[in-house]
Length: 219
Image (tube, rainbow, N blue to C red; front, side, top):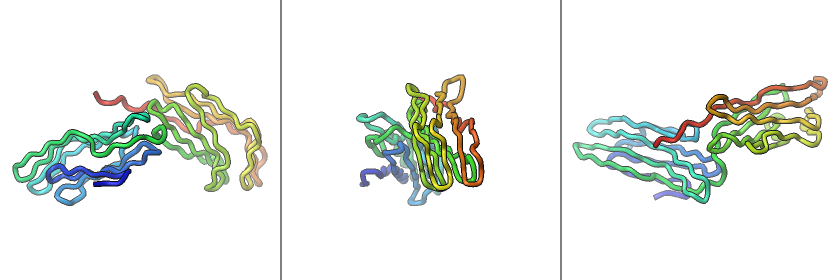
């Protein structure tokens, strides 16, 4: 039984429960042995697997649980390849714990960079190749402007002046995406002129985020 975003699978004494976020492309997996939770991990594009090698009394479980992300309309899933044992009875299972259709490109990583006391930058890296970046200026806790850069449109600029509280950002503030490769990490670079109530116009030219390629999928 389960909801649209949560389901479980019973394998002998082992119960695997997975709760997914289709908008982010991640899943939180809990493993319980004889009714006692023995492992929990959030599976993501960057950390897609949970390994099990646990024992409780006469029961044990070994194997792995893996996040398998697919672009819509293909089906994503959390896949288990486990063996559970209880009092000499061995129960293997290889198959899905839960399936769903993704609502967006999966989140690979998130970064928050403080620019000054009143302004920060929030960067979300998405996609199986970690090559889609959503960038936000945040004043306090309020997003005030957003841009998206991709492998095919790596440089983007804010066309107008941005105002948020006591912070103003001159028009033309620019982000530049360098996609990750096997030879170099990915990076998002910001160029902007920022003014606050207590500081004069200040030019910023700095990296807001840096990341490496996702691990290759297991064959």
